[in-house]
Each structure stands twice: as C-alpha cells, then as structure tokens.
Image (cartoon, helix red, strand yellow):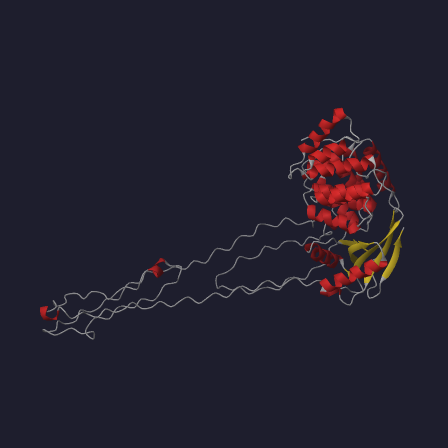
Length: 481
C-alpha cells in the first residue's frame, strides 16, 4: 500500500548530515559521504548500499551504524533500521536524535513497548513535538496528544507542532479535532486527501506503513540486515557456563536436548541474533500396556446332602488387582463371585434363607500428585570492578533527582544494593540532564540487567564504556560534549 505524506508536514527532525567525529578509514569515510549524498537525493537504495559498505569497513563506529539505520528507514526497512540503530546505542551513542530514530524503527517493527521505553529513557531531551508523535505511533496516543498540546500552549505554536498534533489526534481516533487542527496549515483543497492518507494507515496492523509514510517512503517486507553486518559478528561473545544436567524424573528415556549456539544479545531494544536451532524431537509419551485380568478358575465343591448352605461354604469371590485410573476398567466394579459348576440345587425348605453376597473389593485411591515447584527467578549479575558495560536506567533534570531515582532502583533490585551509581551529565539544546546507570557489568550482565528492568515496564539501555573499564563503589560524574 503506497501511503506517502507530503514532506512539508509531519516530518520529525531527523534531517542533517551525520557528523564524522570519530576517526575512520578512508574507504569507510568515502562510502559514508556517498551514502549521505544519496540520502540527500532521496535515493534510499543507493544510500543503503554505500552505508552497508561503510559499516563493513568500520563495524565498531556508532556513527556508521546510525547512518545505516537512517538509510534503512528511508528505504522502508523497519527491522533492519531497528537492528542497526540499536547496535549504535550499544556502542555508546546516547544522543536524543538516535534514540528518536530507534523508537520509530521499533514502532515500525511492531515493538511498541520497546519504543516507549526508548523514548522514556531520554526524558524531555527529545523535542516535545517529535516525542509526542513518536509516542502516538507507539500506541500511547492520548499521552502523545497531551505532550504536544502542552508544548503548543507553552508557546511552541509552529506549523510542525500543529500538524504533528493533528496526526496524533487522528491516531487517537479523534478525527474531528484532527481535521480542525490540520486545516490551520493545509489548504482546503488538500485537506480531504490528507485525512484519507491518515485513514489508510489507521488500522492497528499497519504500523510499518505508518512509520514509512512519515519518512516519505513505502514499507517493504524486511527480515533484518545481513548477518555479516550484525554487531555480534564484530565482537566475540562472552563464554557462558554450561547448564548442569538434570536427572530424568521418569524411567522412560527422554529425548536428548538439541544444543543451540548461544547468540549474543546486543541490547534490550535490539533482539539477539539467534542461531537457527534444529527443531527438537518431542519425547514419545510413555504408554502403559494394561493386560486383561481373568478370574482364576474355582473348583466345584462336592454336593452336600440336604444341608443349609452357609457363608463358610459359599465360594469366595476372586479379588482382581485394581487397574490404573487411566484404564477403562477402573469405571467397572470388581467382578462378583464366579458361578459354581454342577452345583446341587438348593432345597426348597431353605429358599427363605438369603445367601450372603461378597462385596467387591474397594479400590485404593491414587496418590495425589505433588504440585510442581515454580521455577526460581534468574539471579541478576552483581556489579564488579572489572566491568566494561553499564546499564543506563533513567534520565533526570537534576543531580538530586538522579540520586533519588538511584535509590528507587536499589530498592527494587537486590544486586544494586551497596553499589554506587554512574551519573553522567549531558547538555542537549542548552539544557542539562543527568543520566543514571548501574556500572560494573560485562556485556551479558548489562543486557540481563536491562531485560529485568524492562520486564517491569521501565526503560534501560546497555552501553559499552569508551575506556573499557568502570570503577564501581564510586559515583562518576562526567560531561558529554
């Protein structure tokens, strides 16, 4: 479905050449410049080709990853854009612009929860007009409308803010307000077409088409960027301890587990590159063969002359062992006493005396099954002095708020108790922000920490430290230029 939106409206501030601040090889720099030139000419396919070559030449450069992610967005390849931008974040790019593009790619991939967490991590560093529309595209439409409306009431009443608010109204299903707001900047002859464009991608399952249209592109089927560009192929994975073997509970042989190569996760927003495991062969269910139990033959007693039969002379019933509850034989009572062959006819004078009938043997009740114990929760890694990664937990407007936020995280996660935070000061658009992180992790430990934080609905970004080390037990205060 072709759903293009005009370039003069609803464009999130993603334009601008990528700064080449870090040193790189001449080949990578040349390919990066060609990719930027292709983006300027709206040639997304050529931009992707050059940007992929630049990443091959400089795989650990976050700027190359950002450029490739931007090219993927312009090409309508949401999953590839998500993977490349998440790799850039793991390599240390914590800029609001990269976070905004990553959130859009995550929303375009149907990962709304991750997109909201990425936006929340930046706080108010992302401009309100862009942040509100990104949240609306990620499913939090009412919150997006409120953020943009408050920004307009605060004085930022620009055409971009008004059109972003109009689109957020449309995503929230408030079409009357959307039309009235869009009419302030869209000519009357084009207003109907604008509403039709928005309505054509309003269905919940058209998330990729909505983000692609915002980029002036058309969404395409995408399975992710090539494997040789994945970040896990550029850095060796940390060795994992082999799990302890478990004893089989049943005597029947269980199916052997299929070993899967451990894939190294990049960060919580970037799904780990997984090896293709062979499908495990399910174990054959153990079957119990139930033999039919026949009653034992009973010898016929010798006929007694004209004697009153008593219970002592009556033949005893054959007791049959009870069958398991799964057998159909359990629903039937135990067989009664077998008839005696060639027994003498009962005399008439004792017809009134009732013969005693043996009761069927009571079947034992099956033993109750023990309730399975819940699986223990995975233990989070403890920060160590030799850590090379940090897990960024939040962004605050002051040092006091950052310290208070750290205490909240310490109360939630036992592995952070006794540790000191890593507090980083960042200046964005003239405003200062303090980002709080837990340091002292290796790569897998940072990803495990962020997975636990995101499971509780909060944002978290694992980041590799530039100096490759971290001094825990001391709060670090640095400034990002």
